[in-house]
Image (tube, rainbow, N blue to C red; front, side):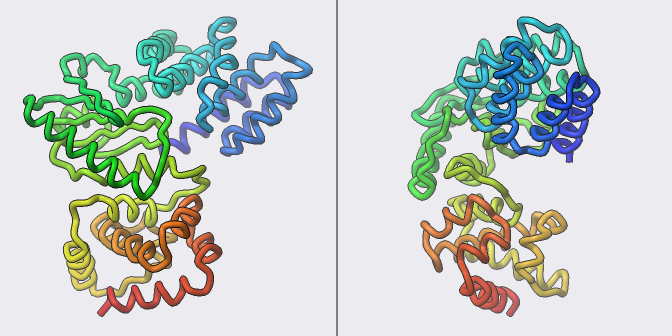
Length: 351
């Protein structure tokens, strides 16, 4: 919901400040997530007006959002160099993202802090401040220990040397095991923040642990959380261009590959929920309306479902489907067999 509200306010910003119908068109395309069209149109308009900062800024942001960080930066920089208003603020904020994803952390932190100091618009300032927190630039992290392994850059709040060694080894092993399935290539090492205090995390991040931000290759985790869940979110995000995620499949995939929860445990959790609520499981409804169901049923149920879906139809079909996790796309990918599979799964769960 916060993301949608942010997009709404940004759209208003574009429209209010727009100097032409072209800028309004680009702003609407960008805010609706139609990044490829926004890029195509912006490039078209820049041919006749190559110095237009609005065209450049929207192009740079759209390129950032599809992961083309090096390509985005030359289009963001002019807003920083030649403007001193909301354009500069958003240019700085997105340069902060680009540099972070290119592992130039010093430039990233500088750009985000400059955006905050400029304080040109509340939305841009809040946007940059949130990334200062999750990227690890807040002064609170100054005494944390950073350890880099092959695939992960760990940030430890409070662990001794032996604890950190074991933690690094176990997460690296989990990374390798999970990625034998997804075979993902990440744009950068995962920044894995290991918190000793949930209260500190809530204060700095304004969010409960644990969570990941897959597009940024970031995990924030309490030190006692399971090994594979958030790693799976990051690795699975980079299997292919994902057009749509659903809670049921996305969380189910993370639970399936979590490595620490047995099928027996998950099945008992589901059976307990069914008895407590005196109801029957309907997969299609939970799939489509996953946000209306509690974590206590969505997580174990979806984990079991994804595991059996893969066992029944195989890795190749699952990864083909995973790019668009909707029920409708599952019907297209798996065909008529999906209905029978769901019926048999429901029978096993509900009896």
